[in-house]
Image (tube, rainbow, N blue to C red):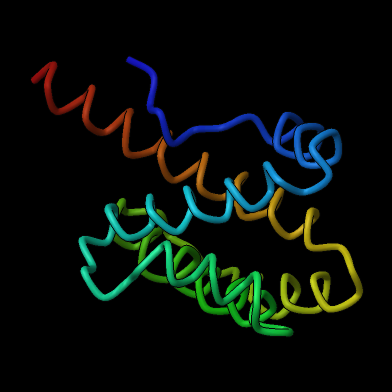
Length: 128
């Protein structure tokens, strides 16, 4: 059973470049939505986050910082991953110097590991 939230990191980069950033914006929306659903947090609004990223200068920097904190702290602990790393500042700096796509790739890789762990736990618990 394939988890729809697990996405190919190279395809994220390739599609973002080929579509001149349109796929990147789609990824931003879908990632915010999957974090909202995973954390069961009704306060997260993916549409508002996308609009703010589009129209507010530097909001995207805040987006990377805010959601990487959720990913590296809350989501990892929810699936039982012992996580001592926090790449929030690294992602913020990469985005600040124009490497937002690298930040997106790092976030997607971490999300893939979280969803993979969640999937294997579900399979293990269903087998018992």
